[in-house]
Image 1 (cartoon, rainbow, N blue to C red):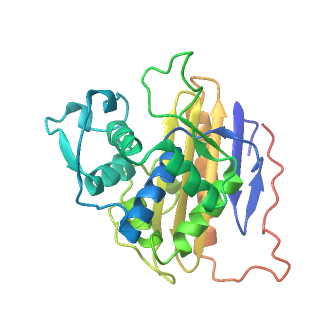
Image 2 (image 1 turned 90 degrees about the horizontal axis):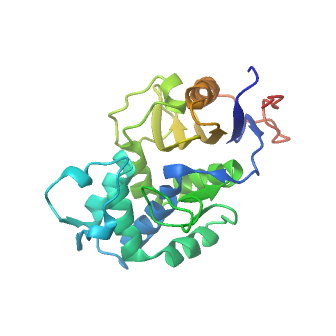
Length: 270
């Protein structure tokens, strides 16, 4: 892979990693932490998926999503979670964060083993100097481990995986993986085809994608790119090269080596 105009961090267990412990802005990938809190709450009964939540003026945010342009002001928690997962709706995200609170999301993240990966603030458009510097921050290693937790958890994991399978953005890692982007039914390995569940993040100078790919085996991945404004597409092209590796690994029936060492060690420069 050629030199890149920024930092490309990734963790693909069973294949390789690069700058996997470097905290980077996550953009909307950070919403995965909020979605995990919602899925946990629905599973335990602490949160009611049918609970109506009225949108407040302070919830509305521009950028990704459709609620800003819709007339309805009241949605269920389940509706808002699905909108957050499928189209990364910023207004839905803010409403859910207001409902459950940043502290609860942070506590759940710590319980899941995340120490450097956090939501720092609500979605703000624009983000001003007096606000926290970014929505969310995290590392590729923690995020890949988190996706493995989601994929193996038998309580709240299946619901969150279903939401991720409905993600409409397949422009980064999954762009290089042959799959049906409309298949939101959770599939179990082994599969003759390839199935994808993911969450992406897009902001000026940031592209991020984390997900679960299932074929003859399961592969979890996290890729985070940071670059100067205007160079984002070059980073996306590099991400798609990693997607080729992820897709091949998901269709590789061979077991990992007894040593557990990855099949690839990166020499990427950036």
